[in-house]
Amino acid sequence: MSNKTLPIGIFDSGVGGLTVVAEVIKELPLEDVVYFGDIARTPYGSKSKETVIKFSREITHFLVDQGAKLIIIACNTASSVALDLLKGEFDRPIIGVIQAGVSTALQVTRNNRVGVIGTSTTIVSGSYVNELKRLNPNLTVISQACPLFVPLVEEGWVNHKVTTLVAEEYLSPLKDNKIDTLILGCTHYPFLKPIIQKVLGEGVVLVNSATEMARITRKTLKEEGLLREENSDVTYKFYLSDTSANFIKLGERLLGEKMRVITQRM
Ligand code: DGL
Image (cartoon, rainbow, N blue to C red; front, side, top):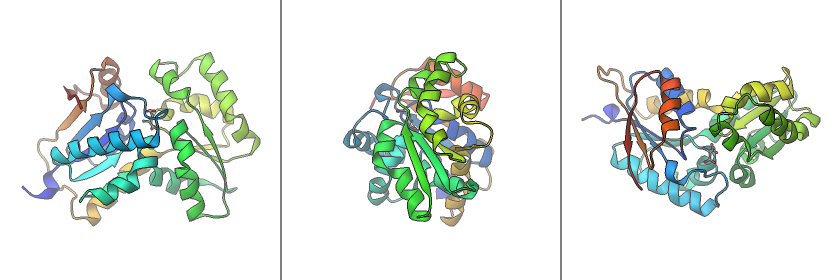
């Protein structure tokens, strides 16, 4: 079997990575996908760096065992703390979402004032700020952890007055600092786009890394000679470390078909 016909592996701490799966499937319709969602151990965003690295390593081994030819870390928290380490430990391309959000933000900003929001572990890691500043030292970057956003999205409160109040509180320093671009540095935040846009105003561009991530995946597969050119039986396999009705509901909404979900304890 040629390496080209092997699946793309994608993992996240839970359901949020489905936003990345949806974009990858749109951009690369001939690729098979194997996904791992760590439902049993989510959230990662409030856990220590060491713990997130340990979980990410275990999952990467699992996806490699499933034959993944390339691995996408869809989780911003895991990308922030584990990407560089894992790249050195595995013999296949591993890509994370940070690079995607950063390259889009750099193309979009006009006033060189960029905001970044993410989980506590992502923001404490400094991953976005460091990468943005490395590529453009003249940038002013304002970052803000928004730990309440993930549970609000998981509760389905994407259009709720409580979420608006929380968003006003978190986003006020970004607004005061006159950012013109905001990186949504967490898998769950694209669901809050309408509220965030309303709070910040139409003048601020919201960057969802998932779209750029899919483009980077295509480019990497092509460069590595791994891009699949034909596939008459595209398969998407979803492994979860615990059962989740929410995952299936969200998955069917985003991917629009019956999903094959397999429970896989870690
Ligand atoms: N997937 C995580 C991220 O993108 C959010 C959920 C969590 O904290 O595990 O950072």
